[in-house]
Amino acid sequence: MKHSIAAARMRDIQPFHVMALLAEARQREAAGQDIIHMEVGEPDFPTPAPIVEAGIRALQAGQTKYTAARGLPPLREAIADYYASRFGVNISPDRILITPGASGALQLVLGALINPGDEVLMTDPGYPCNRHFVRLFEGIATALPVGADTAYQLTPVHIQQHWSTKTRAVMLATPANPTGTVLSMAQLTALHAEVQARGGQLIVDEIYQGLTYGVPDVTALAVDADNTWVINSFSKYFGMTGWRLGWVVAPEWAVESLDRLAQNIFLAASTPAQYAALAAFTPESLGMMEMQRQELQRRRDFLLPALRDLGFVIGVEPQGAFYVYANSSHFCDDAQRLSRAMLDQTGVVFTPGLDFGSHQAATHVRFAYTTEVARLEQAVARLARHLPR
Figure (spheres, rainbow, N blue to C red):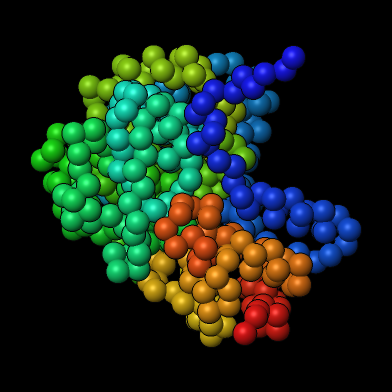
């Protein structure tokens, strides 16, 4: 007789609902239909050539053995130098751990911080893995409803109203997924003060750092370099999604614990990927990334007014990442149904709000401007012909 043996936590860890749409879109592509992808958070740019070449050289040189769990010392030093040169923040390389993507970094942070029953405050809408990782460590992810009035970000008032005896940490994201909104230095300072006053921990997801448009590119480490947890990644700005490489900057007191966790969870990040990432900070690579950032801004500047002209309501202008989070209630009160209908009728794929939480999820969708402007123009033209009125 077969019995259900999955752990109880698995009932609370949901899949990405858009993956069903993506699978169907892939099937349609295989059958010859032209699909315009605006659902997946992965731009169409290749990894910058200097990074690829550095990775090839590492493989050819036999750099395929384990590194230390914390990562290659030269890479940790390069990241520390990057914070100093770009943000004027001095961080010891000893506080930086290299991880298999930002997801690996988040596992380390939550594993070191969260006891069963501890609460982490975060936004709804927000990136779903954040709440699922809290659940994985038997914590409580309290997703607070946010809207355009606060740029879909937490404020000090949220912390004042929702902090409890169980609250251990607050998690922010800037630039944020799915909304593309950015926290200013003043906002980060105020939020940090509220968390510190309550003896809590502030975790800041900065994986879209560098991809900002018309606003300063900042880091929460500039507010408090010693007591803030920052998660970052080589995936987005540096164009290394499939290389699976990220990092965490941790308070000094936590580094030894994170080192032990890393040894046990994943041993070390990919060695060839780490050697490749050393080339990410060269002037040539950074110049390529700036050109890509400018191209993403051109895409945003086209798509934002175009979606509004179609009838989508966008309450706050996205200032970072590569997403537009739009109210779709003018067309349909079920964003999943709308997303599927537009795939069926137009071949344009975008993400329903359900993937990012429950607050107003049925009336919101996310568009990723991860393809060239000419394709975005085609997508808008197709939607204009088929959106329900």
